[in-house]
Length: 135
Image 1 (spheres, rainbow, N blue to C red):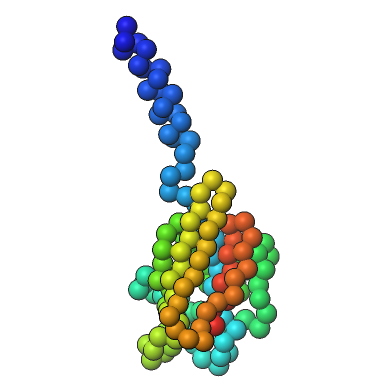
Image 2 (cartoon, one colour):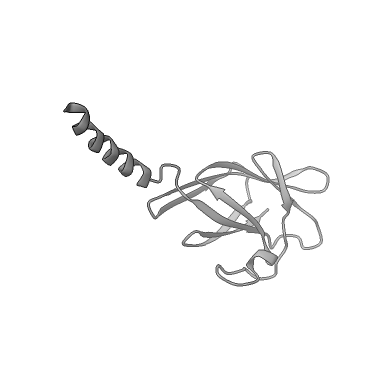
């Protein structure tokens, strides 16, 4: 009799747990720069090369058709990331820590750096985050 009672309870608990989003979501993150149009810069996330950091004259906008052509698109799940920009010689031009937490429709983004005169300008809307990196 106890087993018959426990079976529906266990099924209900499993159903509730399956509806939870424990890991959070993924942010559609787009990187670009308005710094030094005559030079090439490279983006690294957690010491992994991601691509050339595109230069733009004007800030791109979330939801536009050209957004992925104008920026370096990198989907980032909730977590903490080391963001680095290097020049052709491998010199670090920007180093910052990017923290992202997405849960139940709430988004928390933060950036910290110990380098003077570097940083970013952020435009975020929903799960779209456009990061202008300057150095």
